[in-house]
Length: 400
Ligand SMILES: Nc1ncnc2c1ncn2[C@@H]1O[C@H](COP(=O)(O)OP(=O)(O)O)[C@@H](O)[C@H]1O
Ligand SMILES: [Mg+2]
Image 1: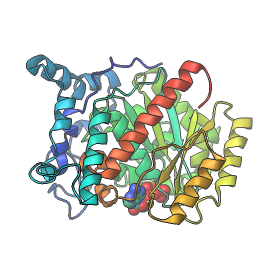
Image 2: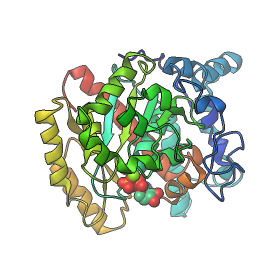
Image 3: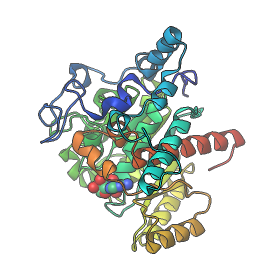
Image 4: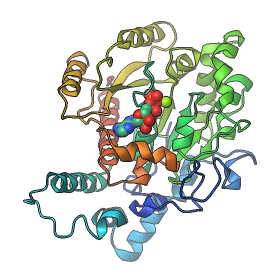
């Protein structure tokens, strides 16, 4: 059971300031050519790798993060900095974008920027409800490149930036979620492989993300590439992650609000392990021509897991990704998905946004890389919907 930290302490953590667009050398690691001046995947904080449990109590973490920073600042200034932040347009825009622009400005771009910023401020000023128990969410779609990783890390970062304690489990050998969350995942790093194959506790391999203190990641290394086959001969092969997560939730992870499991583009044993331990499945769907192909197979797999392995599981959420409202195709795909899954499909779509695709090359989510961008605001709004749906569902006693 979670022990949520009190609401309203979850404002933007100190490190998730909108002014973080210019990454700092102390913040973490970066891919080649980035601006942090730290070699790729180099460990930065000694307490994040090795040295026993890198996964301190989520509550303790919340106390050392934005939560306490907010409390202190409120006491000192009488202002909530989360709101103050919202009024303080990012450096990128502070000097130019909003000065002299009025709503009746002719420029559609200016109107869109104002609209996006207004929406962001409203979201920043809203409390996101926290779930009464940990929500474990499998993010899956056996198609590649539909936005599973992008959606996992950005929803996780959005919820964490609003005060939730969030763990992302990278269960894809490509390790893209680990990259986006800025945690080392070179070969040999303790990872999800050790959890699945060697019974290593999750608390020993999880690393705190450098940009948001209430966000952790269990990295995936290239070792995971063989795991689907290696798992075949292991006892209770479908329940390896289930056992590990339940151990975690009894101890160091008891205050976690959300666990997102980013799956590989297949329905093999890695995805099955995720589904067996999850209450929910989140399916990102790219608004392209082949979007619905394969969905039947995916839904069948969820049904099969529900029948034989985990009666709790259900498709709770569908997120339409890389949505471009200007194309007929995107609109048609969206309306078809909504017709099939009216209750699951989020109203909020995720637009195609350059900032979203740039963020991982700076070892960041778009939530810290450019919180004012349309992509970041869309993910923040989607996160709020997800938080509210979970809250409503748990209070009505029903499924989403
Ligand atoms: N909203 C978006 N706007 C622009 N590019 C995106 C968006 N969502 C995802 N992408 C890009 O699309 C590619 C595939 O996304 P990814 O999340 O890795 O998909 P998957 O995990 O399903 O394979 C990546 O290069 C990512 O940066
Ligand atoms: Mg991926």
